[in-house]
Length: 273
Image 1 (cartoon, helix red, strand yellow):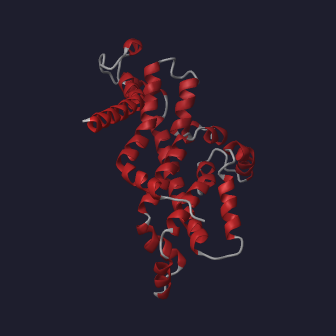
Image 2: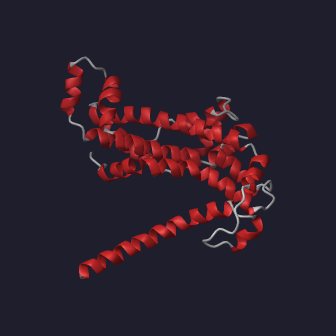
Image 3: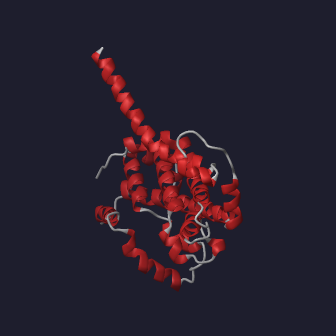
């Protein structure tokens, strides 16, 4: 009986914690569908449903072009990180060369450096390459990730060397081994890297604000930020919340469908040297 009471109490606490995390998202979605005059008194129950905030937002800013730009940039960045990160991780896990461990620990060290340290050098590179106000300035600098390299290395370390030796005996090269033989064995790690990279690219605001000035090339986070703080929303809270909902929706949907692989990978990826 005591064990059952403890179990009920434990699940009650988990439920309370889940509701505390979910309620802000619920309120944001509900408020974006509520008439402006009712948002201040909004609780749990809807007080009228309207889509005027969404139509007003679409009329004020080019949200669909920004959505396309964000999807394009985030998709290319995610694909690049998965491909190049897995290649680098394979080299660090399965190839023997001088300075391999030093290179690995150097990559780990770069994870401790804040993004702001490389901000100015990266911007100077974009200016020299004439990539300012182009989507290349958003895609190219994000085509690799130290975290992705680390995660792929740890995933490849769990795969027996005999599998790679057998593939080489059959005449497979390193690229074919990575993409055709090893990738099917590390699907959770690939999905984890994909989710995290897509989220990072999708939510990035600072770098696009620096290198993109043309409205037609802006990403959704950049455009929504300028829309919310730049006065074009005309201090309408409902319109701001509608833009925030559209910004968060793709990430929420992707995580809901892929959370099983994400949790599986994060639970099974240990650090091996």
